[in-house]
Amino acid sequence: MTAVTHEPTFGGNAGMSSEYLEIRGLTISFDGFKAVTDVDMTLFQGDLRFLIGPNGAGKTTLIDAITGLVPATGSVKKSGVELLGKKVHQIARLGVGRTFQTASVFEQLSVLQNLDIAAGATRSALTMLRRRKTILPKIEEALEITGLGDLIDKPAGILAHGQKQWLEIGMLLVQNASVLLLDEPVAGMSAEERDETGNLLRRIGGERTVVVVEHDMDFMRAFATSVTVLAGGKVLSEGTVDEIQADPKVQEVYLGTAAGGEELVRVAGQSDGGNDA
Image (cartoon, rainbow, N blue to C red):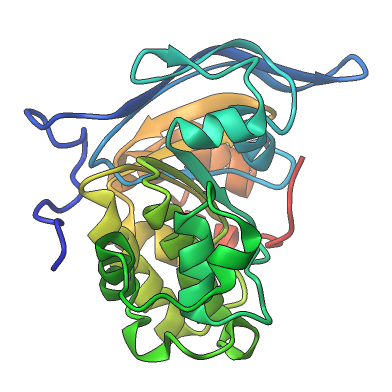
């Protein structure tokens, strides 16, 4: 039983009870160096937004600021509520969740215990570890959405790389995150795992605001409904996948030339998948 009835679409799902993330003038400095400068972005529920750019463009730093991990100036509002200046746990409680390139799961515990802990942050540690007689409806839904229902008793540590990422996304879902910021979720995955992950993003992206930091251009082309390109800590371009690939400014950044738009996919796909500043 899933509540997902909408596919992600460019511009989001108008007419729904919509969540959104509004970023205005976001600037992040480290010892006088501006890693991100005056970024404006509006991210709507139901618009699966990919954030791309060369290494050092500021992609990960941007989501670090949104989630309270690094200080910033400007404004980041979730459905009208200011996030900047709040603590990490306060931002999480407002429904903003993020994943990291290396999945943060409790490897010694089962899939179900991981989800139970995520769902019950207000319970005692002993209570959270005790096996429930029944499974919470939101955990059942997360298991169905992530495709992990047959693995509930397996230790998280023995899951495949992709499955750990899906579990981490499931842990955000049971925390009722309505804004999900995913940092290179398919890095190191097989082609099959990438496709499964893309389909998972479609399942969750229709009802939530989802931002994907990504280096894999083939994955971006297959699943993004909108794209923001960062370069040098600034927004270079924004639009559909086709609009981005045809933009001479984007071609210049990836190719060093304003020619050969289709080359963008091949050349950018060779970009180092490491974390950027």
